[in-house]
Length: 131
Image 1: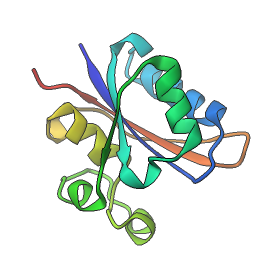
Image 2: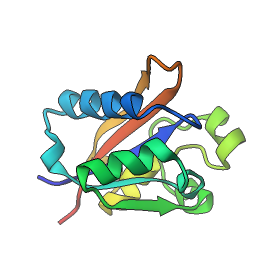
Image 3: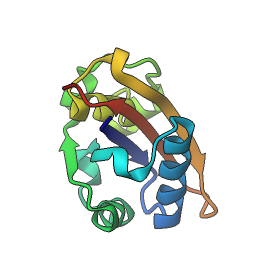
């Protein structure tokens, strides 16, 4: 099974925080890093150093979506805080679903939240890629 990761994070998050969040979310789903075919986020994260480093380290392509594209995706855990700052009610869940080309039925991990040692938050969602 191949999956898409959707990632949301605080600005200037540490690479270690993202690595821990991803590893824990994958473990929750009973998956390894090898199952990940693509990583996805909002286009406002196109310069997020830790996200770019994570994708480069793991050799994962990074797919970015606009707030408008993400806002059109039905998700189980919309957030008004995310909507206020990002212009969409969800980043991680919506990005994972878009990248996996599936709907909520393909969501394996809804919204795994992790606060790192740096005090920054990362959110990871995992969706099964539609075949």
